[in-house]
Image (tube, rainbow, N blue to C red):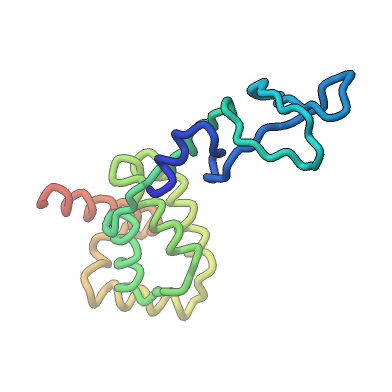
Amino acid sequence: MWLYPVLRDRRYDYLGILMFCKMVLIEGTTADYHCERCGAAVRNITALPVRRLCDLAPVQPPMPTATVIEIPNDGPGTELKDIFIALGRSAPGCWTCNGRALQMNVWGVDGCREHIEEIVAWVREEYDKLGRIDTAKAVILAATTGLAFSIDPRDPPRSLVEMAINRAEAKVLRA
């Protein structure tokens, strides 16, 4: 970065701005000043302000670097979204769904297994919003695509989440 050499020079602050002395009047005088930081004295000043580059300007700590988290494009969240699309429940603009799918991808297979109760609660929340017509459509699509044979009718949300995690794990093992 172009500011790095500037940052190492003590006369610059962390924004790359020159640091001038912080001048204060020496007691008992009317025209003599000294810097509070470096102690440099300037005598017989007839005009203000006094502008002098400070020799001991404090060195600013380096700016913290941002932590970069790589968000995977594929994982259990993507698999769960694909299952929902196969069941006719796609909402490409749904911020909540996309955010949860990304969270699942970041957690990965092992993290999703640790957070399975939380994920099942998310899916159950959406499952409870379905009306009879949407449920019937999903059942028909599940039967025609073969998903119906993998879904536990006693707890469909949990079986969908487990299916997504297993699919993601299978992809990881194949790669």
